[in-house]
Length: 395
Image 1 (cartoon, helix red, strand yellow):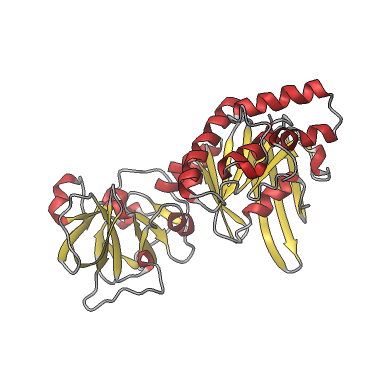
Image 2 (cartoon, rainbow, N blue to C red; image 1 turned 60 degrees about the horizontal axis):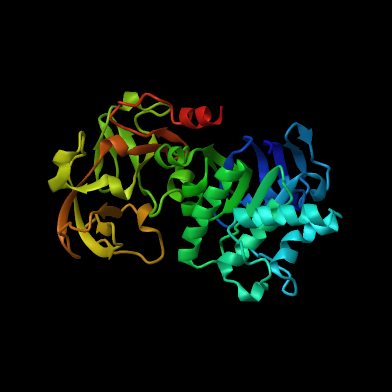
């Protein structure tokens, strides 16, 4: 296996910039996921590693070799696509061995590699089956085995689970983690599904509009997002946001105030516009405030929609008197709404007046003008700069 390094990679199509000055390193044996919304540049970035898309600017390295000008077949990479693209007229053995036979490997070596790959992905006894006789998950395992037999330096996977049903996707996520552990492989994985990114990756690289926003372990991106975009994208449901102003004793927003010492907030001054961020699980009923070390002052609200999810219940709260839930925008981004996550045994009904508090140790503060994170704990207990954790994770 080998490390992968991108140096100032940019890809333009005419006047459109798909990838904008991306630099990152994937360590040898690491599982890194490129994640972001549709059109953010994640697939294009991976295609520059594969050699399918030449960069307009920048260099691509695999191991210590500059492979920017090499053809895909000479880069030591193997790809698994969303479209499995098995040959329907070939059985499993023939599909897995197709690339080896093209390269004129002898029959004994082909058989050895195919049987080894089939064992790894649990396809024993299925080598004589036709693709039409197999389930979607089994077909995907054939596609993965076809990549394994090449003994690549790097595995590149572009949304390989997107066409599977929800239950099978969860199963295949587990299978891919086991596969990564067994092969000690270097893997670059592309998905728009943050659940896949969070559960499978050593680190995730969050992209938006072709720019790398943050690369760090999943929980660092979740707990210490580097900016508003990462904070809003990572986590389901999304973080609540409320724009406000830094004042002498805290932050004032249209519907609630949060106490803090402005001196503990770097880079901004009293009077500057800031955005308060808090995740749904860090919003609590005021009656439970005693369980928090430093709760905010109570916030008056009215429950709107209740969504039981099994292990948790989502409660959509209206903060402003007369506020109405809008179907056209995300509740987490509305100043008049707040999303709260509670346990299933919580007694709460729709259209009920409630008081809620925020866990001040979990409140994030962002500079509204730039979107950059300022602090991730407004109690002042955390002195670490928001960018430090992500930087340390890359070292």
